[in-house]
Image (cartoon, rainbow, N blue to C red):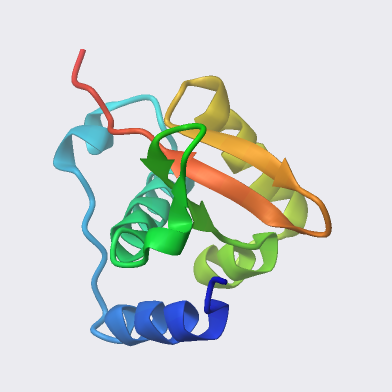
Length: 116
């Protein structure tokens, strides 16, 4: 069973330091700054997921994170429509994959950005 509260506390503690790692190559893409911030936030969440084997998907053979739209809305201070648009754009270009869960936030698999 996943201890969501423990994971949330660990993540919020890491974010209290006031920094987020952004891959500098992302700044020279067609991504908007909000898309870069959300992608970087999700990458950070994946690193936390790697410390908890409950967030490993045996079908995808990858770690995933579970992030609500509200959490992302609070992070970048925007509305639900904008968050959904950002996530859909990131999925469309292959940076994330979302898998629906019944009555829960989506599982989000985050792919590495590959320099082209």
